[in-house]
Length: 135
Image (tube, rainbow, N blue to C red; front, side, top):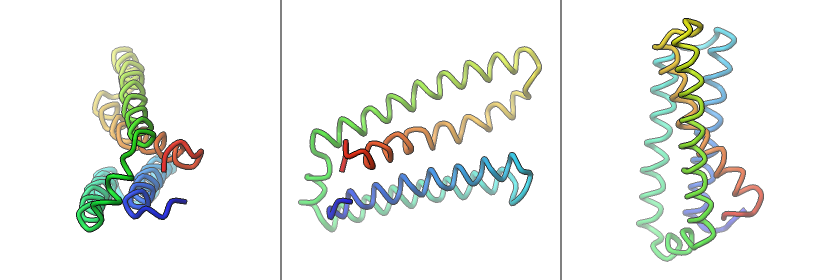
């Protein structure tokens, strides 16, 4: 694990988003825990806190922020966003087909796009960090 505080903040934030999303999906599938709107607020709060925390750390350590966004990290981050975009597009088309054939409620399909949109790029970036492709 990196000693760079900005890289650590990104690692912790990505892990928190992935863990919260997996917990929300598991709770929904098992019909336990709070309602879907509560999970949406929890995951949204974690994402906003992650952004604010990373911003504050970057302001406190400007030299570390430059090092944390070197070419390798920028490449891994960009790839995570691209992978997340295409994942959402693929899941959207699957959910659209399920909605058009009346196998899934359109509101439910829209609701489940949220975890895909939030967790897939974070999970991809987290794997890149753990594999050593990013810091």
